[in-house]
Image (cartoon, rainbow, N blue to C red; front, side, top):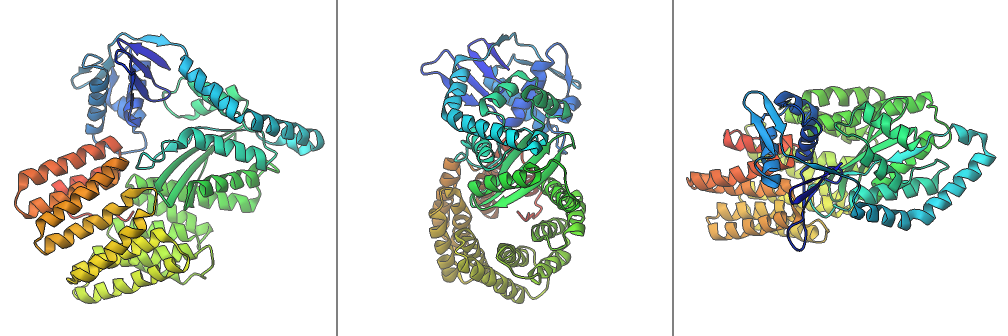
Length: 539
């Protein structure tokens, strides 16, 4: 849906606002949750929408404070004008600004034509192949037609802004080329999305998409995680109901290709699932739901889901790792470490080596950040042994990201032991690896540790220099978590220096970023700072 409001053109489908009275025309992105709030208010502008209704519609899968809604209303008013939305105290909000509903813009049509032109030849070839297979194979008539939605980009940076449409196109083309499945054209899907009243992504929405596209399978995806350590969450909407899964991969191409392989194996020959596939699907769906619960900080639900996944697949190392993280985040450290040590006893194969690496690193991380015994030096020595094993595994597989992570943890251990020169060497080595990655914001963790070493040595100007460098890198990448880590580390420094006002200002900046990111984990982390409660979350 698109509408005009005075000198502004609002596109609810694309999540953009264009200011038409300036040259050149300025375009601003609308934050995802704020966009959903605006959609609900515009669609129901004939009445007052209660606060609870907005919270239930937009944050249905989260337990949040009312402040997140207040923040979204403020963002709409800042962007479109103070008189856009009227507040009804103790009741809710109503959209009161007059708007002019518009048809699809020439610019959108140009984009769709461009997409059609770029993939037309491939789609025609895929269609010919599909017709051929249908003609020669009677089974083909039973195969579902597949439609990919734009990939939701939940990466914490700006370097993945290309993912939604290009990722959708990549998945569509690859599945067409590697299977006999029919795949809806990208521009057809975009047009169908544009014409459907999307108040929420409920069953009715996906049913309407299936009807418009004549597709029996709608594939919804979300990319999250960090560069070189990604998660691709997917939901398959079909007559069997939604089926969820999650793919862990080092890069985007691997994640997309693995999803194509899953779809080809599941639907390429027959739409019916075998018993073995059913059990595998159950475990993967429980694991995927567990990861979602984990990301929302609902650790009790996550623990139940991960344990359910492990009933069917007890050697599912990724589920064991996430279960250990959930246990640690509920302060059951002994059971978390025991579970990870058990993972190390599962046969080492090429597929499990990465998980063994992670298990060693995670045990060391828990021992570093959550002291358990009275002999702290012995605890740090034990942590160093596990981190050293993780480093060796990372070096043997040339996994540069986890080499860098291992170096950072070794540097942290040496800082805590007071061996500042050795700690600095490890951290500078970690920086070298991070500088080789496209996502530069991985450098911030090492820079924060270098700043802490400088603070311990009373070199405050050196610490400030490291903090400035870390903040600049995080800001350039628009990486919300890293911006927050830097601000809170600075706030810690000034709080220790009894400069409470400056410390609180920095922490308040961090809180505003956390709310803009709509991240329960980030919000909880900053609120813990204000409450003087130590919090370490296993990511």
